[in-house]
Each structure stands twice: as structure tokens, then as C-alpha cells.
Image (cartoon, rainbow over all chains, first blue to last red; front, side, top):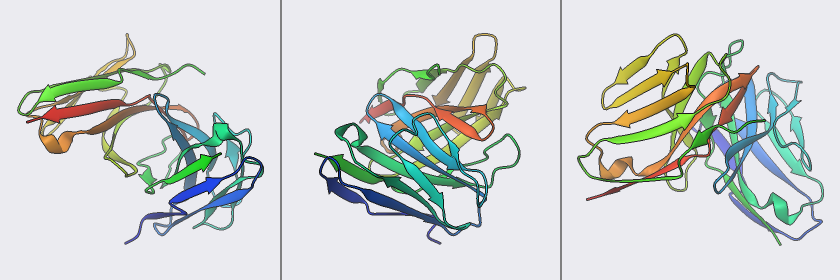
Length: 115
Length: 110
């Protein structure tokens, strides 16, 4: 059982380049999330999708776009990468019920470096 | 928004108890969580507590909640080297937005 799968695991970009991080889950979860992790700052929510067809901004959405392609897949796009977007990105999913997110299941992370 | 605060680092000896502290911000949070992150991996849920509880025990783990002070703690009894990891507390800030603390890196030495 794969759980949450992210690709790529590592990526190096030059400033101004674009790229898309892919995420897929096989647990039939309604909700999916994108977080970034930076040293000393914990995880910060970039965007989330409460259900197929909906997306909402999190704490740090600037410079990112997302697409909830179907129930399984939730992609994160950097249109014009900046060095400040160097980070480890995590996708997560949950069977959220009402206010409670329930348990979040995380992918293994994608390490992005922007030069 | 305000941060969920944790101390950055804790070092203990194998067999000792570890106590990881967290100060959260939203007094209306209904659930509070502890997640564990091992090196090179994503986060995994360790335990959670409902806001109407003061304490929850799960094997070696004890969670204490002080709602008045908005303080959450995780105690690990008989800490093992395999417990070395980063521990995150988290609160639900608003609809389906889980906000994580800064993380505490626990180092367990033999």
C-alpha cells in the first residue's frame, strides 16, 4: 500500500524556472494538503483542498499555484522559482470530517533547491 | 498569525523520561496533536487529545493539556535511541487547517 507518493524527491532549479511537484494518494481521502518545512519554522501550510474541485490558501500561498486534478492527485506549481522557495515540500492527505482534519498521512517529501 | 511555540532541542540519556513542551494559540482548538518525524521521512501521527481532556496515556506516551495556559506536553517514559526524531505539536486553527509548531529535535544518547 503506497499511501502518499510525491515526485520528484529532489530538484535543483535556477531562479525564474518553473516546475510542478506531483502528489498522489491511494487511500480515497477527501482532503489533501501541501506544506513546506524550513529549519526552525516547522511546517507551514501552503494550500489545501478539502474535496475534489476545491482549493484554498494556507499560511504561505504566495508564489505557488495548485491543482486538484481528481480525488487522488494534488499538484503544486512554482511558476517562477525564487531562492526563498528553497525548502522541503510535503504533501499530505486525510479523511477529514467537519472541522477535524483527522490523521494526516504524509509523503516522504520533495527537497527543492533554487539557485 | 501567531506561532505555535516549542523549544528547538532536547537531549536525554537512554532510559530517562523526555518531556517536550508546546504552547499553542487557539483556545477553541478541539483537537491537539503530536506528530513524529524521523530523518528523511514525512511526519507520522503519534497521539492526539481532545480539548475536554486533561491527560491521555498511551503506553510510554503521556499527553498533558492545560487549557488555561494553552500548554501541551508530551512525556516519553523510558526513552530509547529509536525515539530520536523531531516532534511537532499541532492545533486546528480553523476549518481543516492544521497548524504545526516549530518542532523539537529529541536526541537520545546511549
